[in-house]
Amino acid sequence: MTPTIHRLDLPETAHRARIVAPLAEHATAGNFAFAPRFLTLALQDDAGIDGGLIAQIYWNWMWIEILAVPERWRGRGLGRALIERAESVAREAGCAGIWVDTYSFQSPGFYERLGYRPFGRLPDYPAGESRIFFAKLLAEDDEPTRPEKAA
Image 1 (tube, rainbow, N blue to C red):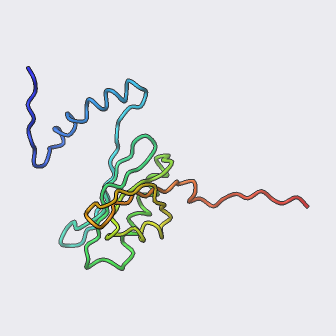
Image 2: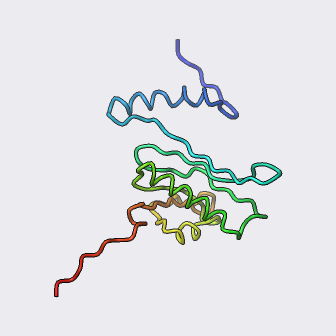
Image 3: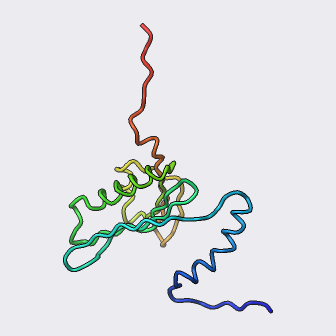
């Protein structure tokens, strides 16, 4: 029997796992086991959670899927603090780097100030703007060791 296609509004965790399973099987067969680990950092006050960071770690890279700081909390260094915390987790997990995407009308300067460099751009997404992909190699973040000059 041929399967039919169904649109799901928000897939449940179990549905997502079933959809991703064939990719995981194929990757595992090629010695690239697909076993993402998830990181969720929430901004929370007395009213509850409002904003934060969601990321995935797999194949020795972290992908920051979501970074959101509510307007009323901007300018307090919370975005930077979330990224720095994620970078710390990525280092502890042995990641080579982190990648993230944003839009030309959102926050490319924010990521550049934190040492992220563009590696790709999708033009006219949305019309007149771009989706920009940034990466940061964590080794670049560390203090470089410089050889001493011979006298």
